[in-house]
Image 1 (cartoon, rainbow, N blue to C red):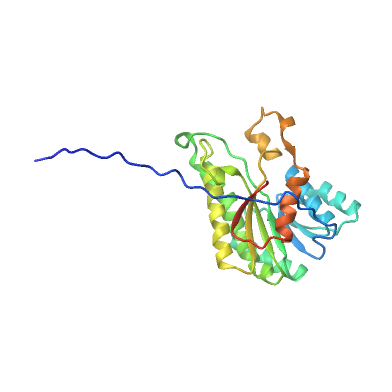
Image 2: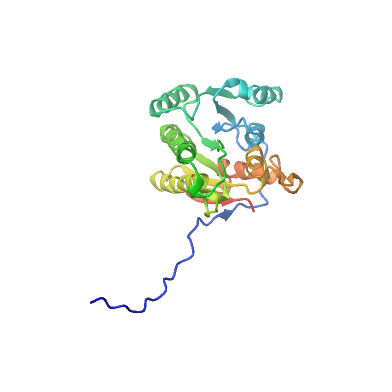
Length: 268
């Protein structure tokens, strides 16, 4: 005999999310803030990457710029040299196609070139079609997971010995808000970025001698944002050269006044 009874309604908890922390709005970097620090930069070919890279160089950093093709960074290279900033080293490597052996070879080459790595600024984020999960393509999920999670994981893993050889090393991973709170239509990219946040926390626990943090700069008039919001009123957005945007990266990669690791930061 089947007995039917009353079933209490299920109480669903609010979805969990990464709790972001604000960076101080009054941070003012000095001109020699990064002097003597070797920094590996990805995504320098974008407008945001161009702005951040120029700022890093202007504060004295010795830059290693990772790019698929050197011609993509020729203009940036020339502008840095013209300003008498430390001459950057262009690293011709397609991160999207690299495997573990390629990253190991890169680490070996950089070790011979600079000896130690004081930081990584990872800004190489892809765009992805916005669509419901039920209509999204499996290939899009695979691409996002590869570029957003596997790519930086392999890069960082290979660079750990070089980072440990430096004083006060720091890794800064650029992220988006969709990786901290689930948003409709952002499935592939949002899930991949959420995994990257988790990776950052794991690395912070496994390597307490290296700082790992993520940074969400918010709504900024960048190439990447325009791909997602092509009809947006750009006049209402901060430019990529806004001091608040630039100082966010400078603050974390320099470590001035900030010793936290495994944290999710956002601009104040």
